[in-house]
Length: 174
Ligand code: GDP
Ligand code: MG
Image 1 (tube, rainbow, N blue to C red):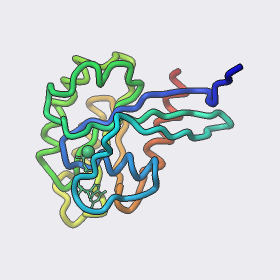
Image 2: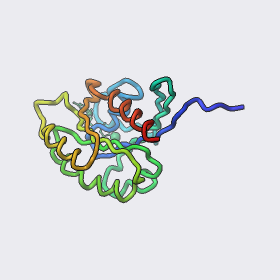
Image 3: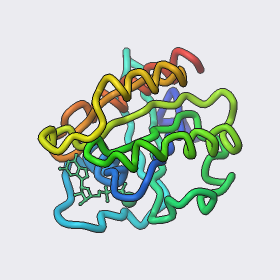
């Protein structure tokens, strides 16, 4: 006899330009660490973390891109069956914000129309180098009907909140 060790299972996929901190966010959340140096690629398809929300065991399968962030090299198979997408940019990198509409087009093309998308501005510990204001990002996310949060994978700011809030929303809409 086998018993499921969870009440819910959700697939969460991180997308966004290379270098914005996707791998570091996943590592921070799943392993509680900030990897030193460059090239933090996990080298596996996904990481698992089970969290408990209101007494329910929620298993999160978190998919990271291993250096294939260019548009259209991440294909349908990557988005398929994603329950949620974490669309990440770097608040110190204007270019990573300007690419967001490209990512949204990909989401529209490949992801389920029921997918929940969260916009994340990462690296808030580098506030003195900020290039994208919070207001701009809020306006953009509201216009696209996305939930928006700023994080620091380095300082562990809002990283738990990001994944736990997302898990709560996924349960509510499951
Ligand atoms: P990815 O290409 O989106 O997976 O980005 P990585 O997770 O590999 O991070 C790219 C670079 O940004 C690495 O040098 C990280 O150390 C750095 N980085 C990631 N998150 C943060 C953060 O929150 N704050 C700071 N200061 N650096 C970060
Ligand atoms: Mg990476």
